[in-house]
Structures are given as C-alpha cells and as structure tokens.
Image 1 (cartoon, rainbow, N blue to C red):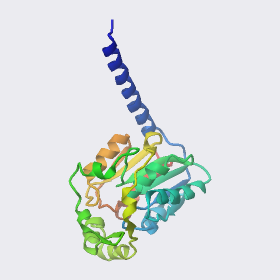
Image 2: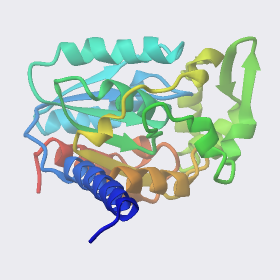
Image 3: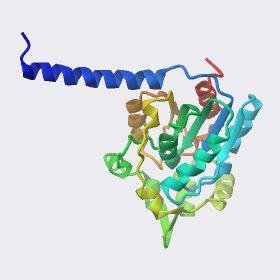
Image 4: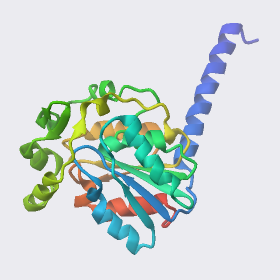
Length: 258
C-alpha cells in the first residue's frame, strides 16, 4: 500500500508530466490555416526590417502587417502590437524578431493569434527575468556595442555592422544602421505576465552565427517551449539575410505548407 509521502510524490510527478505534455501538445499542434501575419521588430531596427519577408508573404497571397514598435516601455510596445492584432479579420500568425519575442510572448494570447514564430528572439516564461536567464550563457559581443544618450540606447556603427548585421553586404548594413530606432532604458526592465507559447503552436528560427543573442540560449528557449525549430546559418538578421527560410517557417505556421 502506498504511504502518504509516496502518494504525494507520485501526484506531483503526475502533475508535472501533465503540464509538460499539455505544453508540448500546444506547441506542436497543427495550427489552423491563417491568411494574416503580424510582424514585430526588436531593438536597433524599425518596421522596415521585415520588408524582404513581407514581399514573399504577399507573393504567397498572405496579408502581412509590420508593427512599428515604439521601443519605449514593454506595456506600450505590447499595446502597439495588440492594436494591429485587433484589426485582423481571422486567424493570425504573430512573428517576433529579437527583443520583440517579449511582445509575442505577452500579446500572443490575443484570440486572433493562431500561431507564434520567434526569429532569433527572446522567449521568456511568464514573470521570468530574461536578463538573469541570458546571464547564464556567455555574453554575446553586440552587448558591448550598446551606447546611451541619456535614456536612449543604440548600437554603435561598428557593433551594428560586425555583430548585428554581420552577414549582410556592408552597404546594405549601413542603410539599416541609418534607420536604427533608439530604445528607451525603461523597455529593458519589463517582464511578461503571459507565456503565449504555453498555449499556442510555436515555431523558432535559431541563428547559428548570432552575435546579438547567444545561439545556445536561443536553442534552450526553443526546446523549452517545444517549438518546431529550424537552424539558419545567419547573423542576428536572418530575416534579411535568409528571408526565404524565414518566410517558409512563417508559411508553415500559417498552415500554408506541409
């Protein structure tokens, strides 16, 4: 006969297994077919960074919208994405690059969102201190290149070209540097209250040559959420240097390909 301690241990183990199973089923479930895609940019960029992917999504017949993330505070950034999500007319794939994985994780619980795609992106759990998580991995080189003017932060040109956009032609990278949108320090202190990847089908594109987010940290987050994961030999800007692969992952999340 099982004693009380053994029973309690078995009960807790069963609950944990159930949680893991539920999470995995959500992440790996076949998403409903979607014709809408909402894309969110991260730090050191603006909405135009999705242009290469948008062109391909439009060719495939999808309706794509790029959110202009204000990069002020996490609640304001999430609200900017939620306003765009509310305008969509049906199932919508929510895609985030880099820092905007925070936004995807928080806003992804919106009823219009049918699947999540993370592109070399942060993917915190609810209430998790992402900075503390990131510190458990070697610091990526781009971090040393962040410079501040008061409360506004940006990447130096050297760090942008070498550590952010390292696999792009220099002339193209310089154009992207010129439209870099500064972020506010307050943005970095925000924490998510939701973890949409626990309840929505999730996809992750790891950038194997990433010098902005440690690739092993990306792999950890993708594995933790049970995401369908691809690895792309690219810098942090895989959405620009490898737009075909990123587009195909989004199309899969939209139920548009096998």
